Image (cartoon, rainbow, N blue to C red; front, side, top):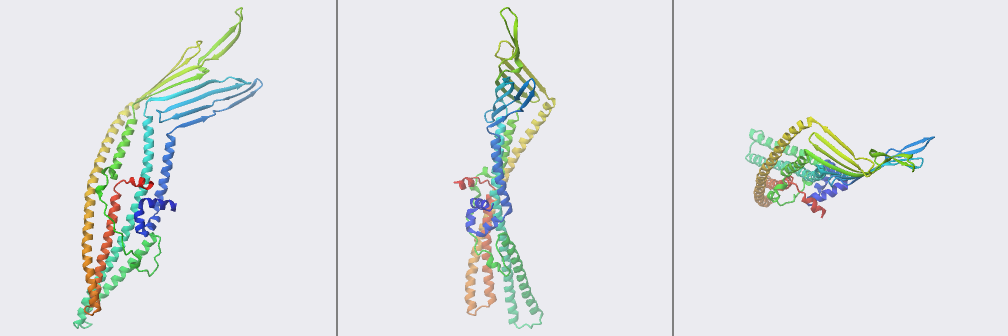
Length: 488
């Protein structure tokens, strides 16, 4: 199971796995991904089963064998049959059967029949096509579900990572407040306020409150890091610093252009179009009229028995026997809504007997009534399908605008954060030199460093936002080309 998951992950997520090993562990521990991998295998087997059931078929039967033992003699009778069918060839069927009876070593077999049947007007071909298409669709959707779950799990990974970075950002912001309040407190002390004065005590309490909040935020972040580490299958021992646990870099990725995807691959449009197409096939298959024909040859047809006799030269009858003629059989069956008609003829090859005709008729009045209702319902359903397609196209246009605006916002934020980081980075270097030279206080240097760290975290979050944007954009579309690329 693990090997299968890993193989499929390599197919769908290789570029990301190489960039961030922890993501691989997170995906490997995702139970939903494992469940969908098994579901994919099941639909593959189901698709193969459907293909077999709608392909060439052969059926062999020995029939019921009967043995009779008596003083008059022993007999054995069996009714073997064989049937071959090819649904893909207008439901063509070939069959052979016989009624074999042997009495005291004498062969009294009859009704040995070889026949062929074919649909002249029917929906069997369309029904077969629909069954195969639905089976293939089920397999494809299962594969897509696994493919998309890999991206969804990746999104979950980066969203959780983003929360950790936001928590780290909150800590840095609170530390910045601490340094600002520390500077204020130092100024108050420098001005000579007494330790018992209100201003001195308020400034001191503010610094202590900031320290407490920083410690609380750090403890919360340590807890969240431990939970996230467990999901990634990695240890997070007590005392581990979140700074050491969290990645210092997030891989930069090129933004995905949503317009590079085909409109027809937009998931909602693709699904609505498929539903309409398969429904159209089902409507075509739901015919009012069907017609099938059959023909065959029967040896010793019991329906055409005749009596033969032989006489001596003086005209006296010496032998009388009952014989069965071979026949050529032809039949037609027609159905129109609730009316079913059947007709057939057995044409004997012997001149001693006449053809045997057969007719049948079945009438179901309620079928005519319900058929009209069904047609009206079908027409309404078709209108709903067209509305669903239009709604999907509207959603496509909305998502285009939404994603383009989201990308612009991410890139704008990243640009501004990058420029601000560069300024604070330079200032932090200068403050460090000035602090070493005794020109500025440590709290002033720490304040500059906190601002640099804050914008560095914001840049990491921007990189995460871009990854999440890319994966969420991909999830809007069917990406079946990834399957063919992985197979090559």
